[in-house]
Image (cartoon, rainbow, N blue to C red; front, side, top):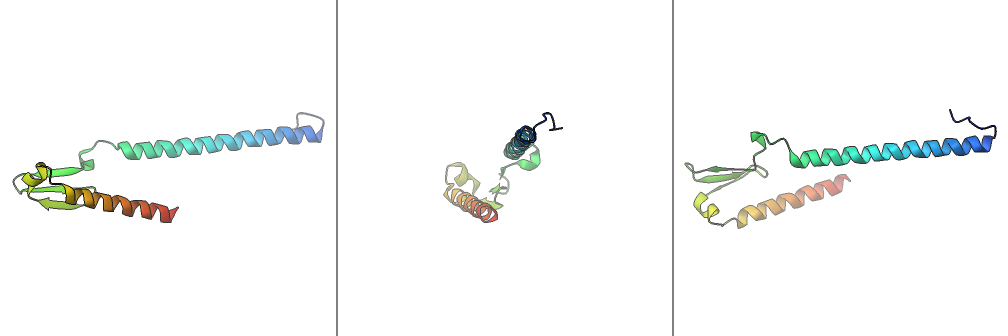
Length: 104
């Protein structure tokens, strides 16, 4: 396929250009696939199973499903007393980032 010219040097140059082009295309496809997967994981499907929090008024509790935190005294939470939830979310996020950094 790369023997278009009579000169071996020219054929080598053509083959190298073709190889570079194919490698670049592969890198671009890989990058685009990674970005698409990342976007899809962030957006989710919108199913009910992806809910972030459950507010259970009869049992006076709120549950954050991202970090499996259940807290009682729902009226206090609804009035803005959410410091403990924010602290738990930050700790969970930090732990995930550290785990990702160790894998990389």
